Length: 489
Image 1 (cartoon, rainbow, N blue to C red):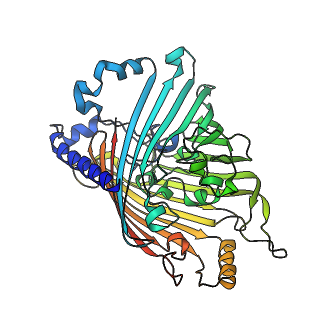
Image 2 (cartoon, rainbow, N blue to C red):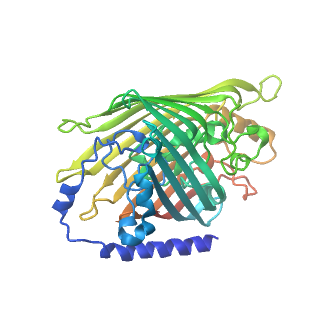
Image 3 (tube, helix red, strand yellow):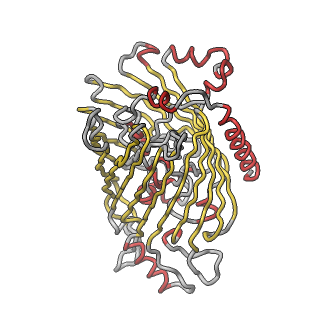
């Protein structure tokens, strides 16, 4: 399977590289810039907010991205055989099919060396119910995944911050299915159905460039929320309310079933196996509440400063959760009341090309904290920089460098100390995991992109013992190379 995936990926990449020079038209750079609409301030920012990051990439496998480019025009009449797509659009139905094929190789360190391959087919369908049946202000949406291959983090590295944002167990899965009603002149939006929180919360328009999953749904959420939280590849029944009093300011909050996998999260069964196709809709578990406020500034034409977005938010899960360390008197496991976290982020454009306002550099900074006594991770920080259009003639390409830091909680480290004292073999004490990723996304044609990436992981798993080492030494630092090929129809 891995060999076949690599062969397909290399073939697609070669086709894209061959296709690119054949698509170069006679349009001059000045004509191209004049034809482009100004991106800053447009509603096409990742996460459903106004775009403030000039370096937001054209493509992303992240669910929060607003990917609109398509290779359909390249196919001419064959791009819409029978005119079925145009017919559906006239009746308010639009769809997009994204294909992501990628391969990674762990060059050194981690659990073991070797290669893995992953493929993801993502079908998104949107229905404007006003056009379709005359239901004013209403829209419907569905997302379906088909996932194949194996993940590098799970089988090769053993780290916390997942090497690929599309890593998941092979499955055909219903991801999202919801209905939204807008009210009060499109200022209030009520959305009900099965939703993924990673499409709207803690979203950085700059960080969605990167392949590592932590730059989408941060590792502190994935580690601390039950079943990894309502994020890819799992979703959960949700009621979401969003209020937009001005184009630059928004408030949103979601009430979510707190166990996306359904069933008993203490059973030891992987939540992806408890809810293998996304058609188990749990509604009786203790709820999870997430809320955030986001403000976009300097988005209007003529603004003196550079555009940016600042976001503050938090989450709380009701019910009882397991504490990390046992009761100091009885030595038995403890249950404590609820769990929570606070977070914030800044997305800031720091430079725009004088001759092309849609090219330039942006930076991001995100941070989050959770109580130490009941969570594996208590502090998380990531940051990075991206530049879109750095090289002449490559206006749609994006180059980026990012850093992620996941700190193991004091309670978890205390548990490691207890295990080391009571065990018969040496056991390392975890501390933190650090990740560095560099990537370059090359847009080969409308709807076609190639993206190599290199990641370096310091102390995978926070410094866990290598199960293959009889002396219990730590898993060594890992270096991973990856190549991703993305198409959208």
